[in-house]
Image (cartoon, rainbow, N blue to C red; front, side, top):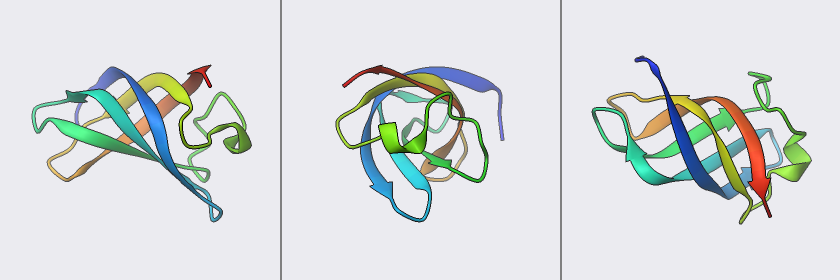
Length: 80
């Protein structure tokens, strides 16, 4: 993993088993990740996962990787 990078984005998918996919407004990191993943098991969300519904605008930090998904480290809701 790499350094933490600030992002803005939108929730595109939330699963009942505790993970959420975020589409970044702009690609992040050296491999230009367009999507990030956050899991309820990491406990980094500043809001309950019930508030992370598709269409919700969010911001936070993520670690980019050479894979298709970045790892979300912190997240907060900007607006719905």
